[in-house]
Amino acid sequence: MQSTAARRLEEYEYSREYRGVRKEEPPKLQVREGKRPQEGISPLRLLLCCVLLVALISLAIYNNIVMVELGDQLSDAKAKLEELQSEAVVLQSKMEQQTSVHNVETYASQTLGMGRVDKYQLTYINMGGEGAIYRTDKAPDKAPAQVFLRGFDSLLEYMRLN
Image (tube, rainbow, N blue to C red):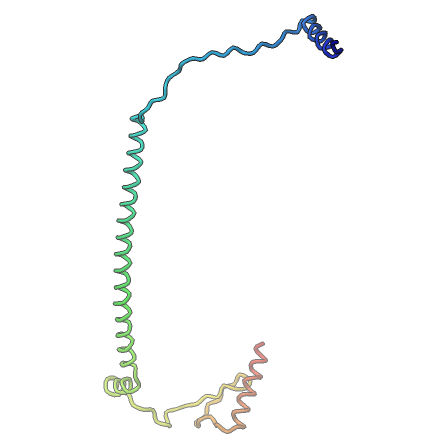
């Protein structure tokens, strides 16, 4: 006994052919022999690799030369810095020696003909209070009341300016 599904399948195939639909045929494959890959390295690739290798080696050598030159410049600069620092110490000590109180006093008295100031040669000016200047013949008083008054005058002057 045949099943109805088989008949329907046959009818379907028949109806496809009847309607003009062709069955798809598998493509025909043809094998052609092409170029075989070369077994060696091409001369152009070999030349390019050699050029690249020479360029990299040259770059590495140049880099080392530059580093050595910079290292020499750095060591020269450090030596110059140490020399200048030691010279600065020497000059600083000479300056301190020449500007000591004893040396200045000796130079002023012997070379310039200067001497110590006497009390009668001093003039004190009191600049405190209302913008007036007073000339006195005596030194400012160091009494606490005078110090307080000068401080108070300074405070008032500060408040006027602001």
